[in-house]
Structures are given as structure tokens and as C-alpha cells.
Length: 259
Image (cartoon, rainbow, N blue to C red; front, side):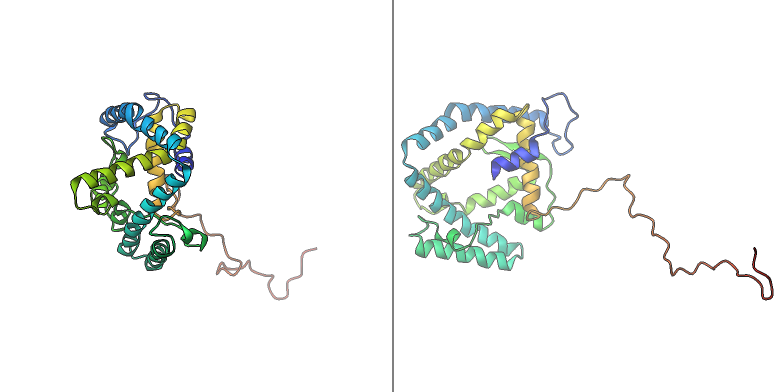
């Protein structure tokens, strides 16, 4: 899903310097420097570790880890659905968590999906957007990657509800954080290969794809249509056959019809 979203949102990107700056990215010069730093760290550390994890750890184990983390993330998604006033979605996500926790061995398995309780992930950045907080400029976070000003504030809150906050000891928290990071990066390996193969300018490709995907998520897949200033507000109304326009006068009484 992430790969498709990035491809749809960023397929029209062009190399840096060949187009006008994006209005959504006024800090592009700084963001590109942070992006380059993140790329260097990823190529040197994160990507090799994720590839080793994928190649060495059996798929069954990796799937179990991904399911457990996903079930814990679903708890926070449930809370965000209720914070956004989406009670029905909140109840369904709550049932998903309960089903996977009870019948899925604490989230190790995912029977809820087979029962039709699909995952509808929500985060606090989306909640802030529902509450009316503007998105703000695009912003690349060191190590964490694409964001906006609004999503940056949301990330701070999201991290307080992450699985790494469950252990009481600092060492255990660091361990869970490392597992989260490796699992996430492993899930993005295929998307990264897609971006490398199709993007002329990787930075703008990821930026445009991220902003498009976040806008789509904010409106639950149905964002409003863009309007343009030179677009007429409405087309002129057609004259109704029952309009009050006076009819042409008929022949006077006694006058003969024209031959």
C-alpha cells in the first residue's frame, strides 16, 4: 500500500532544480540536507540490518513479530478513532484488538482479518488534522524521515503510546524500539526498491507521495476536489420552458392569417 501510494503521488517528479519549488516545501534546502543524512545512515546501517533480518529470521517468526506490534499499534488507532468522533470505526478496531488478543495468542496471529475486521490505522497527526490544525510545511525529521509540522507534533504523542513504552526498564525499552525499527525497515524494503527504480529525484518523489498519502488518510480515502481561482463558481442556468418570459403576441381578432 505504501509503495502504491508513493508511486501515485510521486510519479511525476523531476530532477532537482528543473522545476519551481513546491509551495508545501518552503524549507526544501534544509530538508534535502537532512534527507541526504538519513539516506547515508540508512544505506550504512538500517538497510543492511533489515536485509540480514529478512534473510536470516524465518518468515513465520517475522510474521509473528509484525502481528504482535501491529496489534499494539491497533490499540492506539482505536483511541484515535474515538478522538476523531468515528465511533463505529473505533468499535470495530476495538473488536479487532480484542479478537487478536484473545483468539490470536496475544496478537501473535491475526484471525481478526479473516473475520472481516480489517485494520484502519490512525495516528495523532490525523487526529490533529480532524481537529482543524493546519498541516504546515513539509519537514524531514532526522532518522525518522518525511513529516509535516502537524505530523511532527503527532509523532511526539504517538511515541508515548508505542510498544516501547510498555517495559519499565530502559534497556528493555531500547530493545523494543530496535525491534520496531528493524521490523518497519524490513517491511519497506520492497517499497525502497520500487522508488530506486522509478524516481528521477528521490527526494521530491518521496515528498509528493508522502503528502498525497497523508491527505488521503486524513479524509479517509475521499479528499475534496481541488478548486482553482479562474474556475467559474457555477454554470449559467438554462432557461426553463416554464419561465415567465412573455410569449410573442398572437394575431389580432379579425385579422386574417398570412398566406
